[in-house]
Image (tube, rainbow, N blue to C red):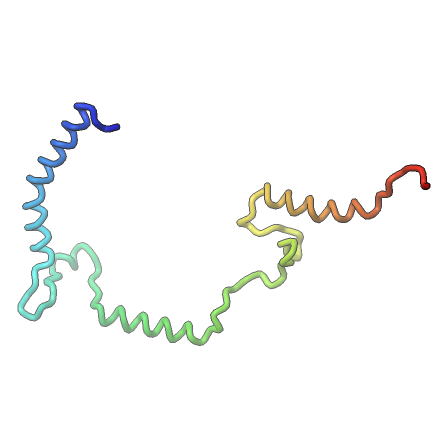
Length: 126
């Protein structure tokens, strides 16, 4: 596929366009990443567009956040009142992530077990 004359022409024209745009892009990239004498990027223009935060500050924030998490025992907050076998909570509700088909299947298993014990087959006893 993609060997028609039209697609070949489109590919050719995209390549030509890349050739003309690439030098302009390179100049803009170098200008954005221009380095001053200290080796730090000049962010005067970028501060108008976005909030500039130094890497040291980000690392300090990350260390503080990791320290707070160390106090936890690493367990997720889960419904402790949910039955693990049937997945029902104390109100008889299935979890929100479960779709109707799965709920119906589990309900069939639960109800089917109850109903099968009480019935006896009628027939002649030999």
